[in-house]
Each structure stands twice: as C-alpha cells, then as structure tokens.
Amino acid sequence: MKKNILLGLLVLFTLHKTNAQNINPIDNVKASFGGLSYVQVTNGAGIGGFFEKYIAKSHRLGVDASFILARGENEYPVYNYYYGMYMERTDKRRLSFFNADLRYKKVLFVDKIANNFRPFILASAGPVIAFDPPNVPEISERFKNIKTSFSANATIGLGIDFIYSGDMGMAFFAGYHYLRFGKKLDPDVNLEENEQFAEEVDFGQKDFSSAIVRISITRIF
Image 1 (spheres, one colour):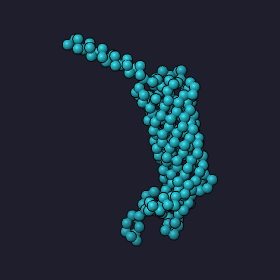
Image 2: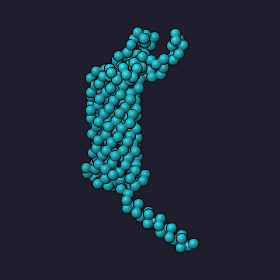
Image 3: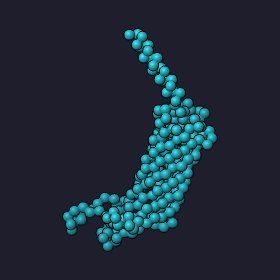
Image 4: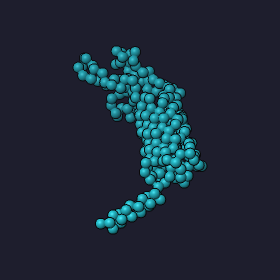
C-alpha cells in the first residue's frame, strides 16, 4: 500500500515537473499570442481575433480584426393598430463595421510582478469598412442594394493579461474607440411610413466614437 502511494506521488511529481517545464511564462519574449475576442461598444457588439508577439522586452506588436453590428435606438417592433399586429420599424438600423488594425501593446511592471498577470496599455489603428444595406425586411433586397463606406479608426486604453494554464489565458481591455465617417451613414428612412415616429427617426450619423470593452481568450504559441 505504501509502495503504491509513493509510486503515485512520484508520478504526480514527475508530471508536475514536466508540465512546469512546458509552461510558457507570460514574459517569454520568444512567445507569440493569439486568440478570439468579444467586442462591446456603446452602440453595438461583435467578435474579433488578434495575433501579437514580443518585439522587445515589455513591447508587443500585432494585428487584430473585428466585425461589429451597430444598434439603433429603435430596434424593437411596434404595434400596428390597423393590422392588429407587431411590425418591424422602417427606421431600424442595419449597419455593420469591419476593421483591420495594427496594434501596439506596452506591458507594464514586467520586472516587478511575479504572478501570471500583467497590466498593459494598448493602442491600435487601421482602416474600417462600413456595410450599410437599405432598411427593408427582404434579405435579398438588402444584399442587392448594400452600400459601403470607408474610414479609419483608432483605439487606446488599459487592460490586463492573465494566464490560467500553461498556454491559455484571458485578456480584459477597456478604452476609447474613435470612428468617424465623412458622410452620414444609414440615412435612408421612409418618412411616409414613419410619420408617426418622425421626431424619433435617426436621419443618419457620422460619428460612431464610443467607449469600448474587449474580452479575449488567449493562447500562447
């Protein structure tokens, strides 16, 4: 019995040492980091992905991309008393953004924190494509008449990287996202059908800047 216990402890110790040797420390300058993100802005949400690697101690450079669906103030259906049923509003926002950015991360307190987390400052910038389909219920009509607009965006903020196993971790980021277009997007509203909501109708928007929160699942390569 004692031999079995000792043998089991020896096996566990050996596995622990093996795993410990395979762990990529969060400060490993030879490591690369990649993963998926959930992105939340003030008027929308989406998903994205990123890849980054150390270019020097405490400095990482990488790329990221995200696809965000914008929300409007009038997203809920309204009750039509004439037909006696709920109907989708014609001023519903149908707008989405795709951005591809270069990102720079400054990792803080590299030599001062021994645990498996690191705070950081992150800045990114790059081009954005806006997809602006008409506000009609038919999906085929939306795709046929979709409009595109181009601009640039920039993000800056603070976050924290956290490694919870040998090669897996999470990152939490919060900051400010700047996004502005040269013309108003989503202005095509049918006022005749929306006469009763005329004061609430969104006649388009140029500035989509807002707060941003990103939660990422990270893998170390």
